[in-house]
Image (cartoon, rainbow, N blue to C red; front, side):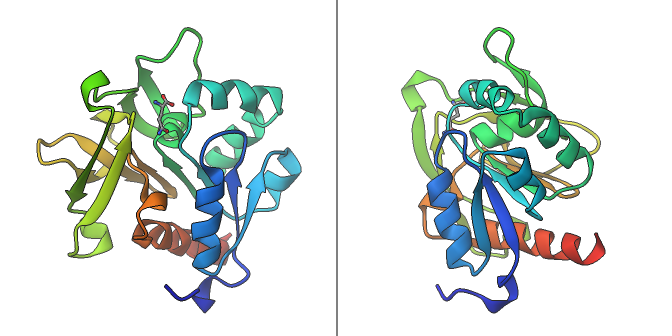
Length: 206
Ligand code: GLN
């Protein structure tokens, strides 16, 4: 894929406390953006969009507090920063969580309820083809790894991707995006392009 010039100079961050942040940085750079890891409040303040990667939401939650990032992240989300959460990142962005560990907090923002590890031990990881109309006609190959599912979509959020059985695995709400799956590992970067288009649009109006 050629690095697109429309993303040149677009500075996006990837929350780099834990998880597969390197893969997201590589994809976002391949798409031509200026992608940087975010571990400090000053780094967060320097970006015009943020990806929260997959990993382990319970660990990310604890580290975000230890790194004094929790409050700045909550404020950035409330302030309209475009944020895309994948898998554990989707959990972090959700207003409500089922099957979290004792005391687990999310950052919130997305008016949804997610269930952690929703596919159970026997189907911890699987791959499937998803229809995602916002990305065009071609189905998206989706990889799920100990993935959450969106159990309830509140009034402010919209389901944009569902499994054949109707379960919701991708949601959008204004500048927020969340997927249960991992588009950073498949070579199909349409979801990251979709996110970068939101970042560009927001930068023009901000
Ligand atoms: N099961 C993990 C969690 O609860 C998410 C897994 C992932 O991000 N691949 O945070």
